[in-house]
Length: 501
Image 1 (cartoon, rainbow, N blue to C red):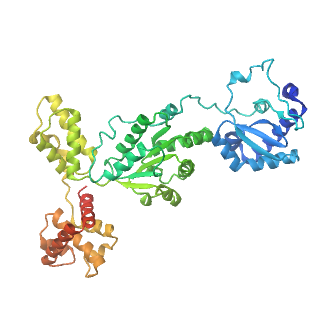
Image 2: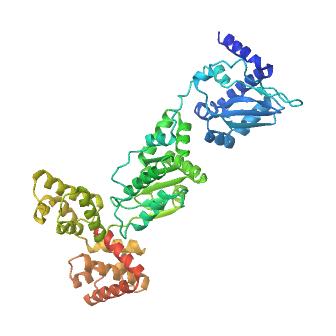
Image 3: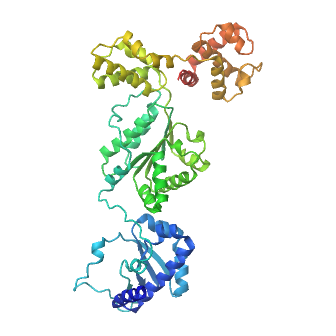
């Protein structure tokens, strides 16, 4: 029965000439050999969508539904196809793969009009043998069919459907800019407003709750507003991994690759979550290369710099550090106060300036905790109907204030300073007097005086039994250097913010 069906199908093609039937039979044999060589999964993803167009002057033409698939086949399979076909037809000169979007199912069954033009060669040329589109799929009916790709007219809307939802509050207009985040803000704004990728990738990193996700959302909002036709995908690294695993499970990796490698802007948040996920890193690595080669913008965020990401392959870390790496530093008092003032204006609830100053001074860990404290005060004022005062603030935020009152120890200061200046912890209390060791030790003494309630003699004893006059000298020396050396002052202030946070 199946043999009779195949014979009738080949007879139907006979109208195009006997050579068409020969091509179909050759292609069926070549396909079978390819499938045996590459396996079912790779065959279904890459080779099954191939359809024959025809043979002209020894050049075999084949079609695929997308440019991405064509490029992949040209890089990985076209030489093998030509070799196998040449064994069947030694006169073959070459194989050309072109892009031809898939026809709608209804159109495939529509008979050709009676007055349709015929494919005739010009005088003196070799005849052109055309194979009806879709015929090999009919012959290999026994093979499992791939689910059809989702047809969406608006590619930008399709990308929005894949993306994670964007928070309408997280825009550039609502982002409070200060010294710790001004560089990251300027870089994000440049990427959002540029016509082409100014630096690729843009890598944003910071600790928890300092604004990197806000900037990611702001970039996406700005691009959607300024360039609504651009294809933008924003999602977390965890969701990227989930989508990839699902594609592997359904044996639909080709659609996944085409989906993510054809966008104009790819944004992945919290990339540290792919740590140790080798297959996901491999896919992200190739997606990264494909997009950069096509000058498509990539924006990545993480909680550490690319060089400090653990469990991530060296080549991946290298790619992530290719473009511009922007750090968001811990907040300053002025920035925290500005954020609170901006947030209070948005909530339209009167909050005394003394309360905002108190919160900015006491809660230094991250912006999320700071905004959560303000939201709690506003909710209390709205629901209970009482004005916000310092007294009510103390009562309502006891748990947050206790957590923020954590005292820094001299041991913590010594460890953090040693790590920052790349010296041994033992150098903090050793007798070495080389400048490369003495300067970090003086910084640690200065910070111990500023951040702890210990007396000068107590601090001296923690630094190898030194006299209190040595601590006094260290404090004066660091204050003098801060006044004359701007870079050194920033270094010390950064250490202080890290210890306070």
